[in-house]
Image (cartoon, rainbow, N blue to C red; front, top):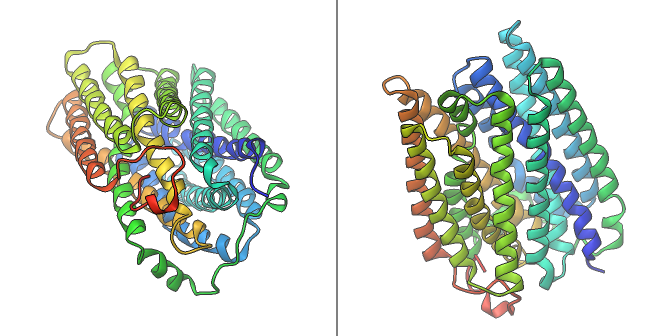
Length: 430
């Protein structure tokens, strides 16, 4: 048996929990470190980069899923590790003012645990989806699960932002504790019993991990798509660590307001993904390549708009950020659809390894992009006004999106998002 629509929705709840926890560590805690604690943006930049860097282990988690089975245990155990890491990260932020060294050390350990949890749970979840979803449902399954993730991010950011107005350390710990504990419970209920009822694992070759990775890397489609993901996601994540501090330092947003701004951005991502899913899959309008390119160009124009607003002090940051989120979602859903479709191509019983490879490329790009954006802001602020420093970084990100659009034009074939025969899947991105 393959996954039913109800089972796909249940697995989407797991993705929603992943997004709900991660957004607290990459937005709310990041803002608190830079604005309330007056730490250099490089500090949360390093911590977030650390949790992304540890996700280089994703191919190993995927390979273990391919060869050992029991993906349910990896999903639940990984979520528990992620929840524990996120709560410890909140404790670290609260501790830094009184005990800076201890608080920072605790934060490093917490973000390392977050990376382990995301890698184990996220990769195993994607491997389960890739192996147990019928071919004609893969693109739709990817859209559903990612929309649910964005929904979790948007709702969590908006709700926690409202709760943290005004901000107190106690409210922070209570909010993070409720979100993390709830995510573990919901994940366990959502995933329990699904793997036992579907064909979720095919017999994989008993090859060592290095040999298994070499087999996947030898596939031209897998290599090309890995490069595309790394470059495009570097552009996608470059603003992640600097948008909320930008809102606070340049536009005077409070903690709750800037956290709600992050929620508004991810709400835009949700709408962008939904629009492309309906247009490309339901109405068959445009190709995946066209949607990726349109998303990249629209994101670049939105970033230019955001950069200019800081120079003229116009209070339009929220609509500009929502627009950025919409085009980000447009780009992302087309790329995700391509990823899910390609995971089942090539050597059999290696879906988990491919998803792990691409997940590692995305995680490294996210860490690199986030750290680059934070470091560039810190460096430019030494010589330039704060609004100019942030504006230049946003413009640099816009350039990267335009480069990504050019790469998409060369890498992704102009095929539509509907079901295609295997012979038509010549290169990644379909």
